[in-house]
Structures are given as structure tokens and as C-alpha cells.
Image (cartoon, rainbow, N blue to C red; front, side, top):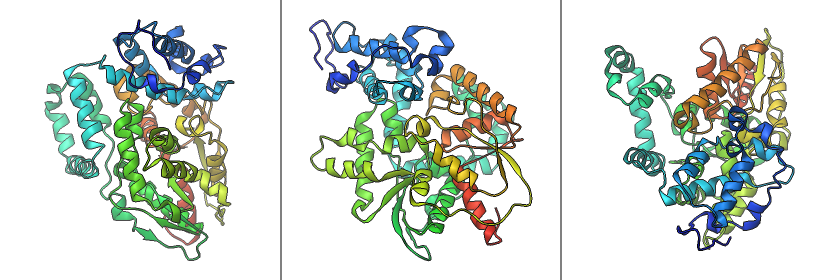
Length: 440
């Protein structure tokens, strides 16, 4: 991608892109009705087509990377609904990540506070597994001891900045036991057909370690030996989506070092946002002489759990349920749009006895979680959250299923305690346990 002398800043990330990727956009406008931010403002710049035009102008040297451009790219949810709508196959995820990386390289959004929080989260907590779990333990203690209730009652939260004060009540409940406490490094089925690796994740590990355990149980029931390396960390999805491609590559190398890919038939994830990133390690490491081949093999073997189950012909639970539960399914953006997986979770859900499946209106529309979007853009995220809650209410369902931790938390906060939110694999695990007379 050439850059004219008119652009005084040297492009560090957008300059690495194949220019044909930017040129793919035909400006047909098919993406416009799918874009939440465009539908909110009706402004061209807030659409995928408009953002790509800005990227192309920067690549051509007609515009510089400015604070205004940075704010625009962080107003984008990265929900990837535009990729499903696009007839030209524009690789918007690649453009999106490189644009954000360029914004961070040029430092056009700098404030001391922003730099500190990015350093603390991306380069410390989510880059060091021991630190992430230590923070998790402290949060669990804060919640389990009742200290959180006392802090809220005391008014101490008033000393925090408004954005942090508003976030504290929605802090997700941390599990008492993390994945390594629940899952052995190697677990064997009664009869083995496959050998798979299990990814435990970061937020998934702290908040949904029970879902990780359910995932392993389902894999064992389907004749998979499960290998779960110790001391796993963040896959780098959080870093890549927030403009830190260098640290995302570091995280990818660490995972590749932990898994013996040659001995595995698949590497399994149950988190949609992670899965969308995990299937493209070769984009990060394609030029790395040590890791490029392993990254391509990883891409070939990475699977969402529902995708893998349908691929191998999973066993349908037997038996009947004493009661019927009305259930609906929200499609996580990075599962349906990012990975093209929509049919498989439904197959899993329809196999579970006792569920009445009610299709959700606008099931593929973003719920507003979008990684950390509900933190960085709370107003727009809140609107999408309320829209999703209204669609759920129309179904009359008492159970909502979704396959991404961010969506799970966003929807649970929207619907309140009257509606249960579960991962599809957890319902399948419960059905298998019910066959044996175990608790659901």
C-alpha cells in the first residue's frame, strides 16, 4: 500500500495491508442496513462503507490519522454484521484491526488515563495469567465476603470516576473455582475416537469455569480425549480488537507453545469472540519464520464446540423431560458473522429434551457487549442492550442461550433475575447428566 508524501506520518500498520483489501469495497451500500451505528445516526461516516473510505483516503495520503478518525473507529462495534451482508467479501475484520492498530501507533487518542488503563489491562492483567487469576481471586473475595455490599452502602463509590462508579454494580460474579481446579490436564472417555485440546480462556476461566467443565463433559460423552494445558492465558483477541497487534502476536505464540498440535484432531473453544480470533493466527504470525507453519495448522484445527460436535455427529441425549421450558437463542456476533456458525448451535439446542425453541427476532443483531464496547461506549451499548431485551421479552422465554461470555453478561444484566441465561453446551451437558440420574 503506497503512501503519498502528503501524509506526514509514516503508516506502521495500515501500510502493511495489501492495497487490494481496501479496494474490495464496491460502495454498493448493502452493508448499511446491517450496521448498528449507521442505523443510529444515518451518517455515512458511521457506516462500514464510510469507514473504509476514510481508511482508503489515509492509505492514499489524502488524510492523516487524526483523533477524529480514531474516535470513529472506536465508535464501530466490530460486530462484523457487515461481513455477512457484503457481496464482495470485503475483509472488514482485517481492515478494522489494522486501523485501530494504526490509531494506537500514532497515539492520536492519548490521555494519561487512557494510556494507564490500556497498559494495566492489555499489557499486564490480560497478558499475564498469574496476574489475571490473582485479580480474579481478589474480586471473588470482594463479592463472596459481602464487602461489595458494604462498599455500595457506604457511599465510597462516589470517589471513583463516574464511568467506573457506573460499572461497579455490573461486575460479573467470579467463580470460586477456576478451570484448572475443575478440569484435569488429560481426561479420557470410556472409548476414544478423537483427541482434542481445550481452551479455557480469560474471562471465560474466571466467570464461566463451569461452562468450561460442561464443555469437557460433553466432549468426553462424544468419545473425545481432552487435553487442557495448564496456565493458559488470554488468546489475544482482546488485544487485537483494541489495536495492540504486537501483544496479540505474543499471546498467540504462547498458546502455540502450550499445545502439541500434531497430536490433536481439533482445538476447542466455547467463546465466540475468542473463536473468531483464534481461527486467524496466520494473519498475525504469517511472516514469523518460527511460528508461521504452526499458526496455519492451528487455524485449520481451531473449532467452536458446537461446530465440532456437529462435525463429528454428536450423540443426541435420550429420555424425556418432566417439564417443557420455553427457550430462545441469541446469536453472538463473532459466532454467526465472524465464523459463519449459525446452524450448529441450533442443532445442539434442538437435541436437548424439554426445550421449546422460540426463534428470537433480530437474533443476529448485536446486544451491545462487543468486547469492551459497553465500557467505552455505554450510551450506544445501552440502546442495543435494551433492544435485545425487548426482543427477548416478546418470546416469553424463561431461558436465553448464547455462546459468548460478553453476550451472556450483557443479556443477563438486561433481563434481570427472572430469565436464566445459559450456554448451549451447558444444556447439552445437563441432558447427558440427566440420563444418568444426575443433577442438571
